[in-house]
Length: 116
Image (cartoon, rainbow, N blue to C red):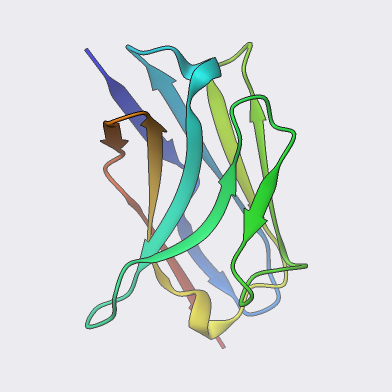
């Protein structure tokens, strides 16, 4: 049974930090590309960060570059998104995604709300 279990969302003030976690099971985690997406009400889903299977290559959206850090621990089957210097526009539901070939798995999403 494939599972992506996200945690770490919450309510924070602008300038604060959060760390999101996504624990994976039911597939070969070490061969999967892991991504974080976010979606705010009325807006399109946006790719925020991505990390290759071995962790050697990362991608960040321009809007979060320099503030967010994507990492993974293949021994723990877990991917992390460290979010620093949070801004109001970072408010969204954040989703963990695993992709391996044609397979595409999604977590349940976790709410991140940033207030002034």
